[in-house]
Image 1 (tube, rainbow, N blue to C red):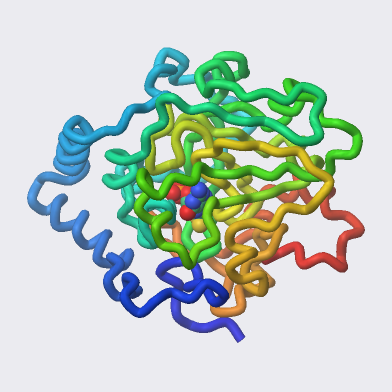
Image 2: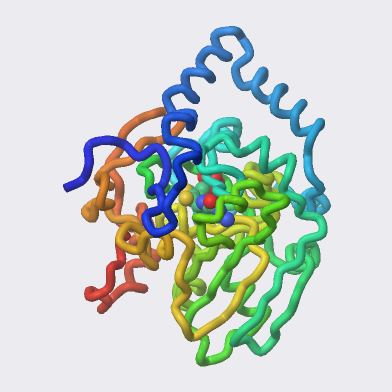
Amino acid sequence: MPAARRPSSLAAPSLHRRPSWAVSEAQVTPEDVFLARRKILKGLGLGAAGLAFGTAFQMKEARAASAAEKTADLYPAERNGAYSIERDITPEEINSSYNNFYEFGSHKQIADAARSSLVTDPWSIMIDGMVDKPETVEFEDLVRGMPLEERLYRHRCVEAWSMTVPWTGFPVSALLDRVAPQAGAKYIRFETFHDPAMASGQKQSWYPWPYVEGITIEEARNELAFMVTGAYGKPIEAQFGAPIRLALPWKYGFKSIKSITRISFTDQRPVSFWEEINAAEYGFWANVNPDVPHPRWSQASERILHTREEVPTVIYNGYGEQVAGLYAGMEGEALYR
Ligand code: MTE
């Protein structure tokens, strides 16, 4: 059943059909070309330094206003050793130039567009729905009131590549403590900004903007659920989902929504962006499982992005000890897609 070919990007929408003039898969820089380009730079003696110089130069030239940078004094935060893992950290220059952020294009090289267009200052987050203390809070006020720490997390995309990322942030449970969810609240719905003038990808009307994701309150309370405000010891950069995103390391990466503007507590299960596009391929739970293939490719192994090593995928992405209990007795649910 799984197709032998590797996905180079998430599914082309089936409900929201991609018109013929849209960017084709062939126009997207494939990973091989991306890595080969890096090799050539290295051969020329430009390697990481050359790339970093080029990137830094561009960033200086065209960087949108950033709320995250105003909190630079909070970084680096102390690393929490409980969340270290045996894999090497993915080099920052590789991670920060290979991203999924469909608001800026349906390919991986969105970093420049995100850095130059994503205005995050001012940035307020509305917290509403079934909570005792609803609020609309400025990003800086929120982050300064939270216990920041660094954690090394595995990051496994549904497209079968993986990275290891040093995220900085605070547990989602700390946010719950702040806003006091009511007893009837069962789910949290997260929403990204919607501004087609700022994010050209949102002009593509066959996607159901804004990007939405959801988790249960129990998942939110799990120690691993993390609100990310920084990466690589600095305030988070645009392409990673500035100024604030989720990291749910036991789930496929698409659950880790970027650039959050609204957090709603509800008794209704949210329909997420990818679920609305193609529910047969991208479900609500999306827990990593090597034994349940994506309908069009295997999930048995993954490619570590920077080494290109193919390694077996592990159930719950290696976090079974912390999260398996969340799903006890839920055999009837499609937990792994
Ligand atoms: N959040 C928003 N708002 N838009 C997106 O396109 N892509 C998701 C997720 N969060 C996405 C998003 C997907 S498919 C993945 S794999 C991760 O972000 C990628 O995160 P990274 O770029 O830090 O690797």
